Amino acid sequence: MEALQRTYSCVVIDDDAYAVDYLQSLITAHPSLTFLKGSSEPLSILADWNKQRPSDVDFLFLDVQMPGISGLDFARLTRQYYQHLIITTSHTRYAIASYDVYSSHFLLKPFNQQKFITTIENLIYRTVYHQKKNDSIFLKSGRENTFVQVQLVDIILVSALEHYCIIHTINNKYIQHITLQQIEKLLSSDDRFLRINRSFMVSMKHIVSICGSQLIMSNGEKISVGPTFRNNVMSRLNLF
Image (cartoon, rainbow, N blue to C red; front, side, top):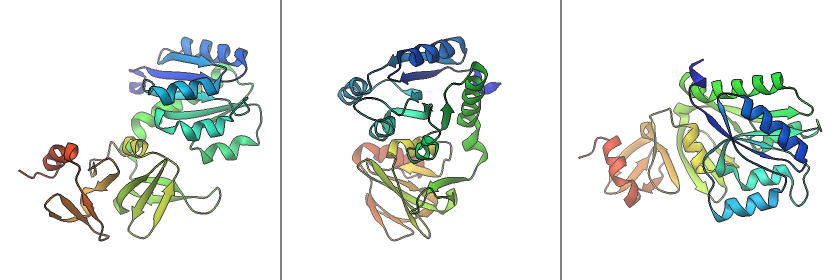
């Protein structure tokens, strides 16, 4: 499978040391995975990551019930540091809650090696091929546990607000508990989207006009291009 040609980094956080060791053994045995770190102390990892950004983490395996901080809260505070979140727990009641923190999968303990392999390879396949084959994404709506399908062509811009992003479409705005960096990665395979400053990403299809360093969007928003983004923006827009 083409998707397995590169390796994917993994971090495991679980207050049960046996669970950490078990996942480490599964990760080490898989040819497409690299074990970066395992820990039974989530607060220590949180402090380390806040002090110094970790290397890119492709898969974060995270327990829910842990001392000091729940896995769900840990996930919300560290969303910018990993690509895929896999919740590992013995409690089915956390299945719905896991989607509130945009988990990619929910592994119910105890799980065997085959279940682990199936989960990982499905996620790797989605990572490589999903964005190439889809022209829409699902976004959380204002109603609890409800997601709506949004066409990428309808997205005008994305604005960042602390740990949230607002996705502006032709008809609605969707507040998502996700970072701009993650949205940028999610849309990276679609060449219509362009990062123009630290807080905004826009769809080039919705740029109505350009006035100096300002872009006027189809919804009337006027957004300034950041100095460090200027050269890339000019190149992408064929401005010389």
